[in-house]
Image (cartoon, rainbow, N blue to C red; front, side, top):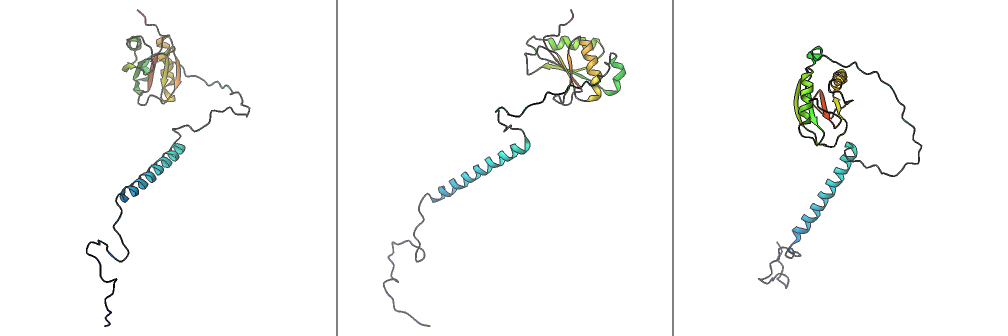
Length: 187
């Protein structure tokens, strides 16, 4: 095996902390730069992901509010046959109808008065509460299944006021009455 004579490159000072021929010590704070880039990339990916989820989900409207230059057509009115109101609750006992009564006004206890009227008429009131909106002027009876339209119309007839709407806003309640200021309790 060949041996080479020592030269000036083989003698290194003791205070030189290099490892390898061309490496110097790593600069301080370099790890924070990598962390900042990773955090920025994560934030951008999350924002892009939320944007695409919002587009596909439809929970955030991205439509512009500018007026359209296209002509709009008037909606056609269709008259659908309405169900005959159920005036005797015992005829629909097999449907297990319970009525939820909500007070949509600022008048305290109006849901109790409406519940009393319904119970007197023979309807089963499941629960009573105050609605999140307290400025309603019109009583609305919501039914969650088209089969129960006749029941909702019978409840409107028992209350003496109210419009009937099919809605899935009140999950778990077959019929929900939201009492407005047009309801006047009987003394």
